[in-house]
Every structure is written in C-alpha cells, then in structure tokens.
Amino acid sequence: MTKILIIGPPGSGKGTQAERVSERLGVVAISTGDIFRANVKGKTPLGVEVQQYIDAGDFVPDNVVNKMVRNRLSEADADAGFLLDGYPRTTAQVDYLDHILEGCGQKLDVVLQLTADDEDLVARILGRAKEKGRSDDNCAVIRHRLDLYHKQTEAVVFKYADRRILIRVDGTGSIDEVTDRIMQSLSKPRPPKPERSEAVR
Ligand code: AMP
Image 1 (cartoon, helix red, strand yellow):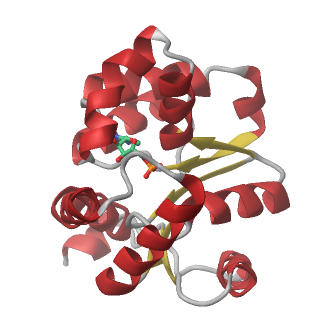
Image 2: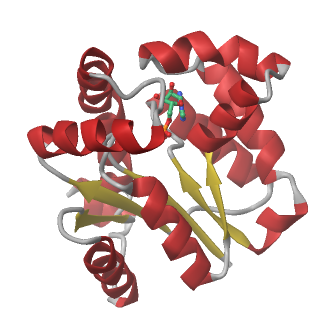
C-alpha cells in the first residue's frame, strides 16, 4: 500500500503531477486545494468558511484542514493507499497527520518535493490565471502564497528530510518530463534511515 505526499510551491505543477503519478501508482489523489475549491463553488458551509482564506492566498486554519483530511482519509478508497497533494503545509499539520496514521498503525512511504525557481513560478501562475481563472492567481496573492510556502511549508519539507523519506525532483520542463523524473526517482532505492544511535552520533 503506497502512502505518499507531494509538496511544492504554488505553480510547480503539483496538482497535475499528483493526478498522473497517483494513476500510475494506482492510488487515489487527494488534493486539499481541489476539495476546498469544489466546496467554494458549491457554496457549502465549508466553502463559505474557507473562501476568504483562499481568495487572499492565506492558509485555511489548521483545525479546519485537519478535520477535512481526517474525514477524507477515512473513506474506503484511501484504504488501498493515497497520494496527498497540498497537505500538510504547516508543521502542526505534519503532527496531526502523524497522529491520524499512527492511529491505524501506518506511516508515510515517501514525500516528493517539486522544486522550481520563484520567478518561473510567478510567470507560470500568471499564465494559468488566463486559462483557469482561479481567484487566487493574481500578482499580489501569488507573492503572498510563495512567501507562505518559504516561511511555513519548507519547515515541513525539513521534517521529512530528517526522516529520510524526502525525494526532491526538479519541477521544470514539460509535464511528461517531470512525470518521468518523478517515476524514475520513485523506483530508485533510497538510503536506509539511520538507527537512532547512529543518528545522534
Ligand atoms: P492549492 O490548490 O494546493 O494551491 O491550494 C489552494 C488554497 O487552498 C491554498 O492557497 C490555501 O488557501 C488552501 N489550502 C489548501 N491546502 C491547504 C493546507 N494544507 N493548509 C492550509 N490551507 C490550504
């Protein structure tokens, strides 16, 4: 059973790659951003609650995201594994996800981080804004989302690097190139996690 996360700055193509990679691995892709957007569109109580955060490029409060993810992971299709896209984004969310997984004797297999240069990301997002018309794709909001990524989500990446389950993948190039790079890096053996005594030496 594969349990995997994909983390990347806004505009890195993580949503597109999450869909492709989950299909190849035969697990469900769960995107917190997509779930929020669907709720906003459907004007559900959750959508009404989170819209202001999404439009401003702010993070939705941890307690709201955590509860939503816990409910989503308890659905039957996640029993066979999952690829989480866009969660966790804060260290408090990492702790909460650990707690959910530990509760059912599970842990993550791999965390994929897509990397790209900030200026390329801004250009990509502005291009996407024309195509998809997302409410959070304008210059000031993009800069704010990038800033939050550097200030909060990079700390998440460090946590997983410490656990030796992080794989960094260059997110530049065509969609196919990036998918191939991801699939190749997933197939490579990773160095074993050091024993505790080794790690503190
Ligand atoms: P994304 O599609 O992943 O870029 O997410 C779009 C927006 O949804 C983000 O800018 C946040 O407002 C919200 N969001 C998605 N995932 C999270 C999360 N894990 N924590 C807080 N806010 C989130």
